[in-house]
Length: 361
Image (cartoon, rainbow, N blue to C red; front, side, top):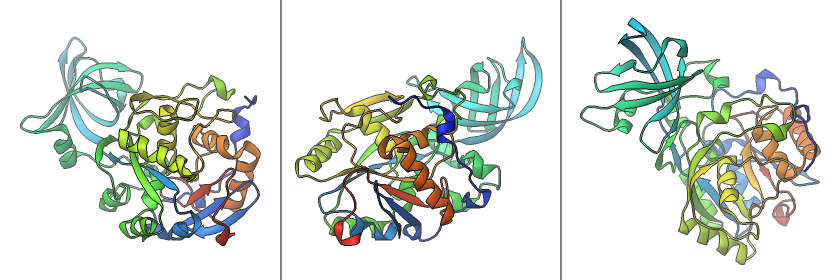
């Protein structure tokens, strides 16, 4: 495995290229198609002509929860008494039904405190570790999902939330059109470029699709703080690969089609479920797979993904497909051509060996 440091994944990104809103309609976003030796400037709406009949797109059907909550801490315990205003962002569900959450200001919370978000939504603080707390929710007369829908806000990524407030548009914009399984606190953003018309045109072209579920956690935004990338510890997220998805991937490989995850979350999950011989297996559980240059990819033939932060694990992941030097070239082109970056930005189609449809080169 290459001896790479964090500096190998750095680049200068003009702030003007950070997208604060998505384009509409969704497939109008630009698409940079990259092979080892070509770069094509296209749009997402061109995707049916850029892929081949028999190719398989793998989507993540997770649904983003309105996971940011504002409430009041009530305390009458050994830690003192009184009230304080608290904001929490749910980060990861636990098997016992509790949630880990990022709290602000966390220093005002201690085990035993109660945070009241609404009459029908409150939580007991079970533990605190730095900025992270573990919460046990009480939802009198309803479910947590229903209470979050009434009282929560969509947790936009920090680089958007720091520049503007969340509003009603984000309830639609920050959710894929096929979101089904509630549990994510961040969107699988490459899939935000798809609408029903594009999905219909892909099917008509003979391009197959299947769905996996990975609940994207707040850890996806955590920075890398070590210099040697192999020392980085990935956050864990829950996912499942069904028998139907396994069958679709195996069928695509058998007919010579390419397996192309849409988004880094789908890629991480299918590679977690893949065996060293390239065969797929069903999978349900946590994954903390860390894909970086030198890591073998067992079933992935390409990737559709947005443009990522400098010095991030996601940039390391795309370099796994294309190589570190080639990714730097691709990103330099994207910056020169004013592609929009991050969650609401433009997208790329990375094809490390097999190229694009020959009719479109």
